[in-house]
Length: 389
Ligand SMILES: Cc1ncc(COP(=O)(O)O)c(C=O)c1O
Image 1 (cartoon, rainbow, N blue to C red):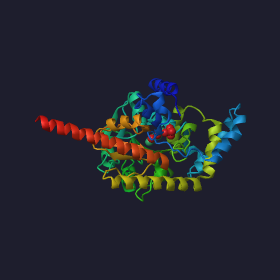
Image 2 (image 1 turned 135 degrees about the vertical axis):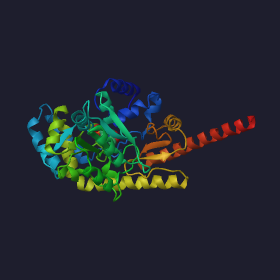
Image 3 (image 1 turned 90 degrees about the vertical axis):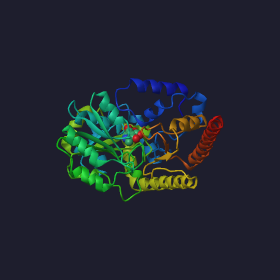
Image 4 (image 1 turned 90 degrees about the horizontal axis):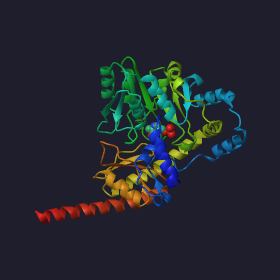
């Protein structure tokens, strides 16, 4: 739990940072007005973290390594990269590991955009990569999401063609809409990529998707296409604070990104990652099943209340609250539940992370309470206006 000083410190750090910002930093930026007392018992449903945390085997592996962290352990990283790459049927030369997926995403922006090669992205989407591109002075072209709230692949390709190439950034499932770009659309886009175009697919949330419409783009990496896929241990693995993620791509694309990576990750985290991978075959399906159950439950409750939402495929979802979410967000935070920031142009959509059953019970209570209060004051305003007319 953050105290106010830590919180303010992180906000300050955010302002000064030149690198890729994480979901939590974007979330904290949006929540600067909360007091220390309000933060103390807050239910955090604002940054798409996983309340399950790292599995016990990860904690043990890291604790076992801690006494040996006086050494760099550089010689052990080649084995680490090989094992991580093999977990996705790739070779060590086809991956680039970094501090979360933020670091490889940042490296991709550096490597594949230039003063003449823009980033082409959907809107709304995760702000990290477009913000880095803007900070580097690159042009960022955005195209709106489809009516299904996923990437419009035809428009993305058309923009890349018009620009003479560039970097297409696509998050699948998309943050914040939680919608999946159908695999047929992805296949079309990969086979229609214009010259000088690299496709960057951010699969931070793919493990939570539960539809036959979704397919990882790692297959395109294995086929040697101009495709970079990023993955993270921050979400389904519950290891956000340990900072581990990786990019997967053809060795020549990895070589172009590598100079923009900082260094190796912590050996303690690397041991945690290996332990997580060792149990991934049971851990991932278990965690996904639990998440999907809670997500379906929330959808059922929303339906019962007559509220609309975007069909969710990640560990968060967007609910249509019929008013500017800024009103809802701050009122809910005052009552102990932190929800997602606004994502223009979807100003009526509230993004909430799926937490534990207990956290979601509190979410439902506070959400409904705030919504009813706002509805009541809206009705009152209307009655007053009518009586004046
Ligand atoms: C879509 C997406 N990509 C990447 C990240 C970066 O996370 P991390 O650096 O922890 O992997 C986030 C953070 O929440 C995210 O939402």
